[in-house]
Structures are given as structure tokens and as C-alpha cells.
Image 1 (cartoon, one colour):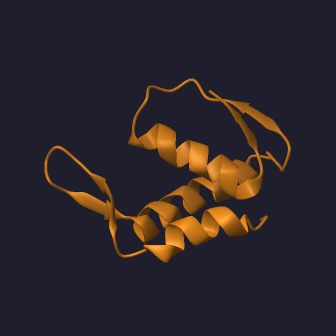
Image 2 (image 1 turned 60 degrees about the vertical axis):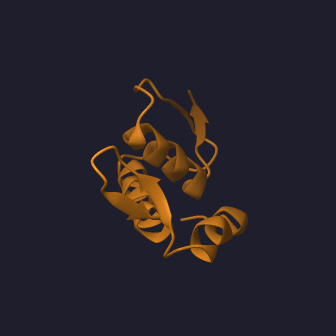
Length: 81
């Protein structure tokens, strides 16, 4: 898996700070979000996607969309919203 150092630094610099605060009051830290996106990235690789592939994202604007988009960035897939 490719290392995206700049993106990695953004999420680890404030890793314990809240990243997502939902309407119900639940929160996800930067680090938790990063790990969840990394799990999606691993799944994308397992189905044969690789760096510089294009992935069309047809998903509503949501937390899941953001995770998928960041997962693509983590491994160098070009996300096409």
C-alpha cells in the first residue's frame, strides 16, 4: 500500500481530536477515522484495484462517502465523484 505522507500527517497530527461529531453526539477521532478508511482501502486492493485506477463514486454525501474518498487517496486510486 502506498504511503501518502502528507495525508497521513494531517490525520495523525491531531489524532486524538474529534474529527466527526454526529447529530446524536457520538464522535470519531481523526485516528479512528483514518483506521476505518484504511480498512476500506485494504478491501479496495483485495478486489483488484490499484494505484492510478479510477473509481466512480456513486454514493450520497455522507460519512461513508468521505471514508471511501480518503481510502482512495490512501492508496492512490483516483476517485471520481
